[in-house]
Each structure stands twice: as C-alpha cells, then as structure tokens.
Image (tube, rainbow, N blue to C red; front, side, top):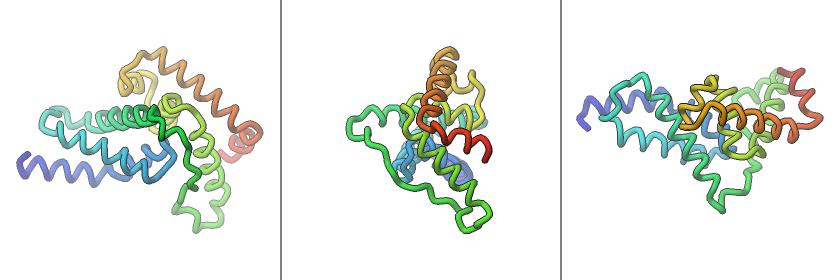
Length: 172
C-alpha cells in the first residue's frame, strides 16, 4: 500500500475501532476476545484495502468479517465456556443511571447464553439496526435463515431472562 492508502486506512480504523470493538463484545461477551476479533476484522480489511472499490461498503465488510470470526471461533472446543466478566460502563459513575447499567448488564449476560449464530443475528438486527436483507447479506445466508435464527434467538433470550424480561421491558 502506498502512503495515501495507509493514511485512509488509519483514518477509517481510528473512526470505527471502538464501534467494532463494542459490536464484537456484544457478540462474544469478553473484552479480550472482542479486541482479538476486532483486530482480526481490521487485519482482513487492511489486506484487501486496495481491492475495496466502494469505500462506502467498508462497514459492511468489517461487519461480515467480524460476524464470521465470531461464529467460527464459537465452534472451537476451547471457546465453549462463557465469560462471567462484568461489562464496564462509563455511566457507572452516574448513580441516576444505575438501573440502565443493571439492565444493560442483565441483557448482555443473557445474550451470551444464546447460541453464537443466533446471538450474531440478534446483535446485527437489533443492536446494529440492520434489516433482514442486510443481515442475510452480511452472513451470506438466506433471509429465511435470518428470520428463523432471529426467532430462535429471541426465544432463547426470553427463556434465559425468564422473570427478568418484564423488568427489562419496563426499564427500556
């Protein structure tokens, strides 16, 4: 890569690093793994930077790479244990936001008990705001598959949350 391309990549990386890291955390539930997964996505993008002709599609490329990395990693036997790490939040210092922090931690903890592919679909649909077609494009699967994974993922999330679901609804 020439210096101009390196500069473009560096600017994109600086602008999107934290958002990609947060998305990775929501998908895997561990900040250290999220860092590794985000790094994997950015390395893949860096390798293909010259070949990306539509710079408006960079977020989609990173999302797809990250999603595949999370799903692939979840299939490895040593990754079947879930982290119990508590989500750090800048808002913890503001006591008036205590309920919001607790709600977010509850939701993220429950999300980690949902199978990886379903969790990835839920994060892309409801946290990243992609529509069914957008998620299907990211995951390279059919829209029907996205719909069924969403439904199964929401059912699994409801089962994990149980009685806490009503508390979450009222807090949101």
